[in-house]
Image (tube, rainbow, N blue to C red; front, side):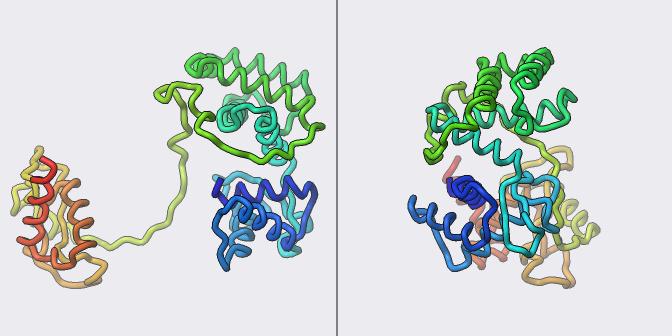
Length: 303
């Protein structure tokens, strides 16, 4: 578990109360050192940045991040703790580990169920906010009545129903039991379901801000027309589509400049990406013939 966020969570669980930054630094770094993980001169800053990144109390927090940490006395006062739902969530993972259950398997299963319960309108709150056995059993019944949840459970060989049962057991008894056993992930945690039937969360919408170089569309069209919309690297052609114009001299090295069609060649997406990869190793490949010869050599090696 090399993730700094996870290391901080384990440190706060071990401390068991709101703690000043100095104590969080010490316990986190001691845990990393004990298992041989990297520690660097800016480790304190890395820990502080992760606390703020996963806390809605901070200005740098974004809604697509998990809200894990709470600034006990407000940002700037240097005292942090786990939010109650996060504390329950990660205590559940410790409990699974202490019981010898598959932590990655059932912990991820309950995390998925928690999101499903809210997305499907079955519960307004995350499951980790609920510790009452009767409420949990009612939620379990309602959840598996849903065709989507029932199908997912069937495909997962009843893993999700088993995960829900383990959370109910934990919520009604596990919070009072010691959970000092360290978290250790092994390959067995993900092998109980056939690999082709494992489900993952994908397609989450994220916002990115990027800078890019503006291309002159007129010269790009002229280049493609000159080369008959055919990749000069491999000969690929499809309905005058898909191919791209490659700048022999990369834009990031020339910045704003005047160019001619002779400064570009037409490549398919695969050869275009390969051209940029080759250019990293050999700056002389800004020459048209040298680049095409290199592309030909690569194709002959993998033909």
